[in-house]
Image (cartoon, rainbow, N blue to C red; front, top):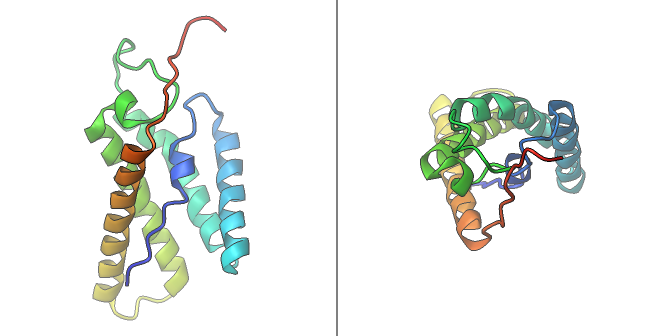
Length: 147
């Protein structure tokens, strides 16, 4: 019932200034790498591309609107605030796990079992993301007006 996925955290950590096309390509390559080692034909690639596609939309929802507050180059709890960052990670984790598990099952069978698996997998993934953020704090770079 529990299969935590954390590999898509690398898509979440990509800097803000990377173009959306490159984020999609990196998401696809990350997913295909996972698919190659787990022998799943494109399941992780599809879910990773979905996360890469939704990432800029979710960032625009939760990024600070005031330019003085938004001075970092990459998403992190320090840059966005813990609440906004956790909502950002939770929404993308939920979308990733729902899409991946839906592709894995290809039929609902028991909808309650399917829903329970999504919720538990997302909760464990979020726990692992929080632990990763606390154990591996990143040195954040500030944006500047110079090139």
